[in-house]
Length: 158
Image (cartoon, rainbow, N blue to C red; front, side, top):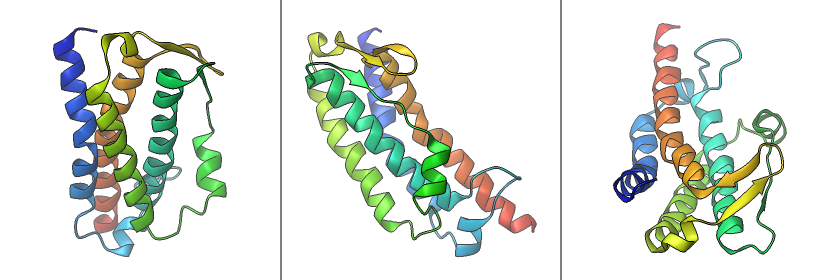
């Protein structure tokens, strides 16, 4: 990955919390709990997913950069949603999401080219590069912000 692309993706990553909170601004409980379609997550569930995903993602980056074995673990996001009480209030999950993004953003700003060349092994997919990590997580919050907007809009149609 070239430097300009990496810098653009880091900026997008750092902007993720802002786009999510903008998508949530003024949301009522009805909007937070509306499902846009059967089997699709509500805005509330998406916020909890973002917190869990970001904490996992933050750990994955750290394991690859600093870990001696660099083994990255997958997780079942649907099982997390079922088992971790995704109907609860969103405030603490928003704080966890924000903290994971901020602390990881600080690390991303300081990583050297040697750091970026480190690789890990994902227990489900194999080779795991930090460029691929950045591609995934840079866009992750933005995609979910769009889903939050759609979920909120579905409450208006009901």
